[in-house]
Every structure is written in C-alpha cells, then in structure tokens.
Image 1 (tube, rainbow, N blue to C red):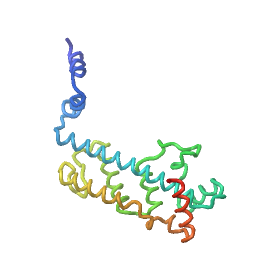
Image 2: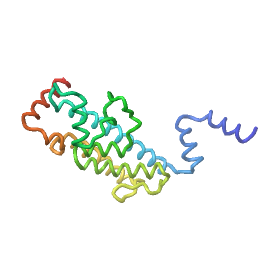
Image 3: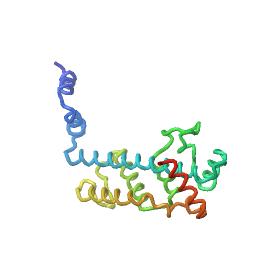
Image 4: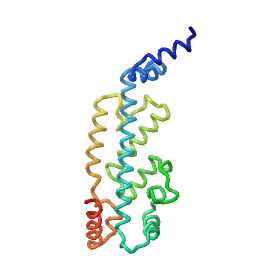
Amino acid sequence: MGTLEQLKQLIHSRSEEELSKIISHAALRYDDNTSQTISFVFWICYMAEQDLKTIIQGCWNMSKIAYPENSNNEVIMNIIKNEYGIDFTKIDPEHPNYSENNLYFKDLIDIYEKFFNKTNLSTLFWKLKDVRNDLSHGRIEKLTYNNNSLYLRETKEEILEDYFTYYSEKDNLDTSPIWNSLSTEEKKAVEEKYKKIIY
C-alpha cells in the first residue's frame, strides 16, 4: 500500500478531535499550547465580529427611528451618510447594494466609532483586529495582547475580562454623536418609538 493510501486510511480512522490534530500537530507540528492559543484567538475574534454586527444593526435601527415618522427613508439615509459619514449601503439589509461580504472587521470598527466615538470597547476591537491579522498572516509566535503573549493563561484571562467588562459598557448612549445631536424631546420620542418596537 502506498503512502497516500496509508494517509487516507489514517484520516478515515480518526475521531473528530484527532482530525484537527492531523493538521495542527502532525502536519504543522504545533504543540497543544500553540494549537489551543490559535483556537482561542480565532474564537474571540469571531465573537467580536459577530457582536459588532449586532451592535451596528441595533444602532442603524435606532438611527432610522430617530427621525420623524413622515421622513422619507432616502432622506434619513442621506442624513446619516452625510452628517456622520456612515456608508449605509454596508449596514442596511434593505438597500439593493447591501452585502454582508462588503464588511471587513476594520469597516465594522470604523462604523462603530462613528456611532459611539472611540470607547474602551472600540480600542479593544482594534487590538483584536491586529491579533487576527497576525494569526491570518501566519505570525503565530507574535500573538500578543497589551504586549503580553497570548500563549500565557494570564493574558487569555485578561483579554476575556476586558472584553466582557467593556462590552457591558456598550449601551452607554452618552458617547454617541448621533444620540447627542437630538434634543431632549427628540430623545424621548425615539425612546418611545423604540419601546414599541422591542415590546
């Protein structure tokens, strides 16, 4: 039996967990710590990207109801685009040019900061983007957070604690230039409309 046939037999005989190790341990020759660190980085970056999409969609929905009910949808979009520099074609699923594939991690963070300005959470998102870039470009040995190696458990704990702490602060509308541009009456009207939508 040839080497390729032996390899195929080996692949078919392995468990799900062992299939992953064929790549990480056998082919790439990474140890458990490296493999686990790569997995940790992938999942925290994936979670951040999904959370960003959820936050931005919520902000977009809030922005649309921030204007009078008789406003033309196109007028609302143009106000948001021109006054706040947000490319609504990237965040409005109803727009004919919308495609989720048009949004990169950098785009999501840029849009987040246009909604909320720079926050602890957006700073963390930029750090995660850099970590993800290192991972994507094979700079495995350079995986760090706040200049500490992500191979260390303490660094993994630190990034998780920071993430969940800053994420819990995300609903602070006081940092939002869009929200702060509204009068007290307009804010009350938006809150009332929003309550009707979510309840």
